[in-house]
Length: 159
Image 1 (cartoon, helix red, strand yellow):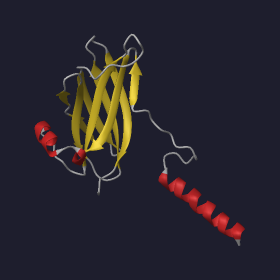
Image 2 (image 1 turned 45 degrees about the vertical axis):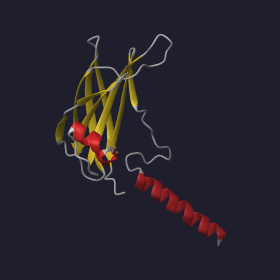
Image 3 (image 1 turned 30 degrees about the vertical axis):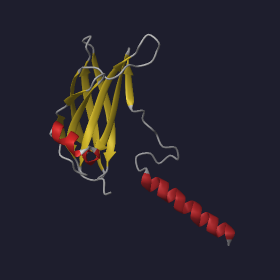
Image 4 (image 1 turned 120 degrees about the vertical axis):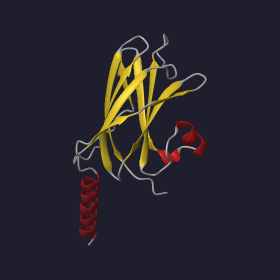
């Protein structure tokens, strides 16, 4: 009885892990680092639903707060002499988002300039569990071009 229960439990766990990771049926999931290094530069990238923005911040950026809109956040940093990276700096940022149906949208990045840092935000509407492939191009202050590609499966925030 215990052996049968253990077998059923193991089978259910294996089935759940295969269902949860259809792109990678192996047992070990792949975790992507949220940055891209090129030379002395590091590009940080992240996404979050726009309903996480405070209402005043969303108004200032002319973004819509909604559980089906994602904010793409890009920051360019440069390596210091001690090996650490500075805060976000000015750059030219362009990009696109492409879903699995090959529908492509151009991202309109808006600079957010704080006292010591600059970063770039763009807004994009999506449907629940939509996979988006992002292609970002940055022009650094020194004139270098950095291309960053990453993908995200986006979820509507129902909280």
